[in-house]
Image 1: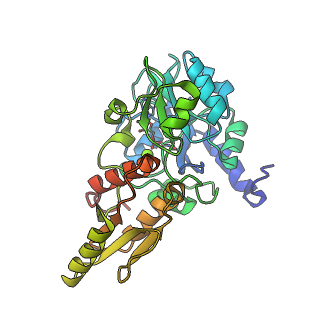
Image 2: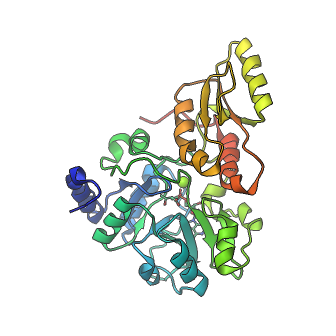
Length: 330
Ligand code: TXA
Ligand code: MG
């Protein structure tokens, strides 16, 4: 019996049955909600791509119950992977390793490598243990859109197309996992997240960042990602206030995502001025501001500081892709 949410026992059982039938479900993790399906079932994985509208060459992350399952997916487990798993799993860290030949190539978008992660969420872990195998799960949003951090966000994205969404509450971290590529000669961060480069280096020594940030292999690295439908600009606080006033005077509806406090006279939301608190609330705020159907979302730029690198990465990509979506498919 699931101990985390006795009232959801029936939903938990239905989710497990759906996964075994090869269906996709909404799954809470500590980072963002995932759209999960049986990673060993190519047909089930294909449904994820169809539901998301995700290009077939964009690899998925396989979620596992613990590091002992690495060998079921990875051809070999380098010592660096074992050390990082010991240090950070369950947790918001994805390891890219060489894949085993028997892993369906649809999971890895045709790559020779595979992304693996053990999520730190009681519902996800309980489901993974009960299921026994790996769950392929990208973020549960349509391709290019803002990642979901509540069960309701997942329902808003997919509606009846994904009838089972396990509700694990608000995601604690709020942005996607740090991705580190261990499949090459030098460890390399492909996507920044809660776990920093310095934290990784404390465990395995030098980790590259720069070149990997251009990698076309990580779809989160594309411009035009994590984007709301409303146009979005990243500005200093003074510029944000001036823009809101000037545009407002022209009859434009401008909303401001501010740091710590909302500037006087500006409509919007303020997020905490610490990186973890900000990341936790970021995607829900973007969705809420997007829902106001303003002409423009202005985001007050957080400090240009290493501690903010993961948040700045998401904001920059949101700005690059904002306002370019077609209307919701029904
Ligand atoms: O926090 C997370 O990682 C969330 C939760 C649900 O676990 N998942 C997530 O999945 O963000 P997704 O599909 O939205 O992003 C996965 C990223 C993509 O940028 C993908 O390209 C990259 O992982 N990735 C997966 N396998 C890879 C591989 N073999 N080589 C390079 N990048 C890979
Ligand atoms: Mg995603």
